[in-house]
Length: 408
Image (cartoon, rainbow, N blue to C red; front, side, top):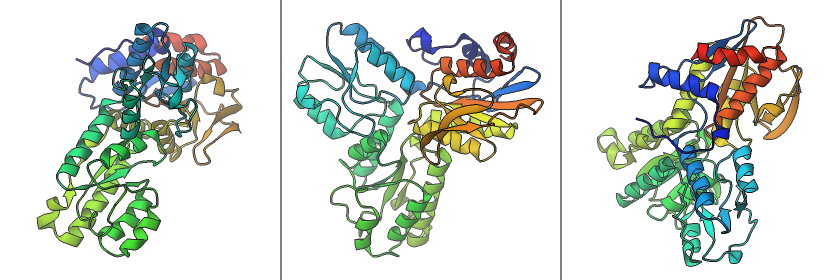
């Protein structure tokens, strides 16, 4: 039975809960990724099978609010944003929690201002070994309220295991992302480590694996992306690939398979296991399920897609990227971004800037199929409000509420 987390009710939606609960009963093994359809006649909402708060996010929220409850009168800090959702982080701020860093690592409050009586909460992305050590030196226990996602910690443990066996670590991730910085820090304690962002960088790495580029050029091509003392001559002879858990699962798999083939071609299949480690067990279940749900939702057909989530949420941006390959797709942080049936404010994922688009909704299409999903750090309540806001554009706000139980 799935664990029930104690999270504030204002993050929940009774309607979305109805739908999710019914799907879990009818599909307990999570094999059916087809969307749930709410048919309002002129508008049909197709809601992704899996979306919203994952295990790690729920765990982080429960711990953060527990820290508030257990430490009245104490100063409480978050190392940085606990998760990438502005509504969750702002609620924590209003309750007195202060942020020590931005998500990019920029200092907001100096560690020098901390004292042993302070409480510091670790974010769901985890943090570097160096910061864990620094807080401990200040007399603060960084593990008291550690919200690091168990699946992120699983990647760290697997990296350590591979390092103990003599493998180097290739991290698929965005180097400036908090989780990748944390994983990189933990990995290179035990193994030479290098970070690659995408297939393009993986192909460059492949050339070094197969000795097609001079080793000295590695330090230019991967400047600031490798661990101290990395030896490009020998540290790419044995590798294992792990990932930032919010990356595209299919991309990690493609990169891993490509590097595996490179090793096989260079060393031969009979000794492949000595050069390439199987790391499929490090993929995050929630990332994979959410992305598979989007593929199935797209396959069901749609005219426009709305993806709800924080604008700095990596996993949400990948859902947008998938939808945008098949239809107009809009990444919105909440219902307030839907300005009217003519205008919508959203994050342009290619330019990484918030823009306002006109004529976004093809209102003349009947019936109009609107795909809805959300990132792993997005509360169900925000998705519910988006559904109701769009329904109101067609004067169907009452009908949407009535349709939840029918759809479930």
